Image 1: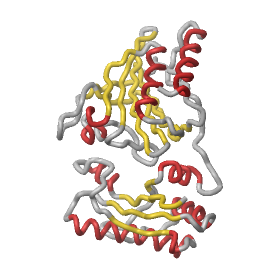
Image 2: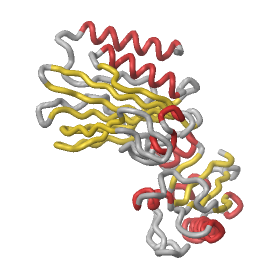
Image 3: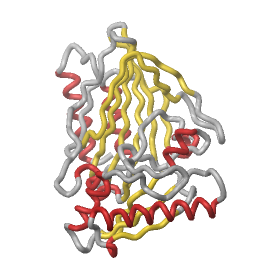
Image 4: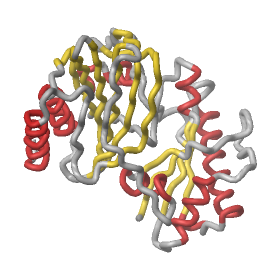
Amino acid sequence: MTYHFRMMRICALALCILCAPPAVALDVLWPSGATRVLARSQTTADFNIATGMAQRGAAPPMRSVSGDLSEEIWHLQGADVDPATIISMLRAQLTDQGYAISFACADRACGGFDFRFSLPIAQAPEMFVDLGDFHYLAASRELSGMREDVALTVSTSGNVGYVHLALIGDGDRAPIATLPRISAPQSADGGALIAQLVAAGHVVLEDLTFESGASALSGHRYESLAALAQWLSAGGERRIALVGHTDATGALDRNIALSQARAAAVRQAMIDDYGATADQISAAGVGYLAPRATNTTVEGREANRRVEVVLLAP
C-alpha cells in the first residue's frame, strides 16, 4: 500500500474514533483529486450482491437485497491507482466503520467475464472494468437494528481508477450514504467526455444512434461529436481513431463491414457537419471481436453496438 493511501486509512480511522457515537451512514474519504461522475438513488429497490465466484458459462451465486439504494461511481487519478491498492483503502474504511466482509475476489478468480457481466453496475464511460484486473468486495453491518449492505467493484484503465459503490439498507428506515459531493469535471474543450478520453485513452460515444441495420446516423445533432471536433481543432497534432463495434448476431465478415461503415459514417459526419479536419481522424471496424457486455441478452447486445473513440496523439 502506498504512503498516500496509508495516510487516507489513518485519517479515516481517526475520524471514526473522534466521532462518537458511531456514524449512521457510510462515510468514505477519497484521495485528493477523486471525481464523482455518477450518483443515483432509489427507494424500495432490489439489488443483487455476489456471494461467490462464477463457474464457466454461468452467473455467480447472488443474494438479492431490498431497501433504499444509493449508487455512486468515482474516478481516481494517479500513478498509484491500481485496483489492489484502491480496494485495500476502501476495505480498511469499511472495517473501521463496523462492516464485516462477506465476500471478496479478484478478476479471473471471480469468474472473469461471467462474473463481471452479472454485476448490476453501469457501463463505460462512467464505469470501466478490465476483465483481467478488477476487484469485487461485499460487506454488511447491523446498526441500531438496521442492516446495511455494501458492494464495491474496482478497476483501472491507464492512470484512472474506477470505483462503483452501492449501499442498500432495510427499507425506508436505513440511512443513505453521505458521500462527499464532487461534480464531474467540465472544461471548455469538451467537458467530461474529453476528460475521460484524455485520462483513459478511449471513450464510447453513447449518444450516437443509427438507422436500423444500416450505417447511417439518424440525423440529429450529437453533442459528443461537437465536443470532439472542438477539441481536435484546438490542437493540430491531436489524432483519434473511431472504432465501430457490433453485437454477435450474424457472420463475422458482415459485422466487420457494418462496424467499419458506421465508424466511417461518424468520421464523415465530424468532417461535414462539425468542421473537423480529415487527417486528424481515422476509422476502423472490429465487428463483434471486442464486446463490453454479454451477447446472450438484449441489453448486452445493445451495449455492444457502439462507436468508440481511441486517442492516438493528445
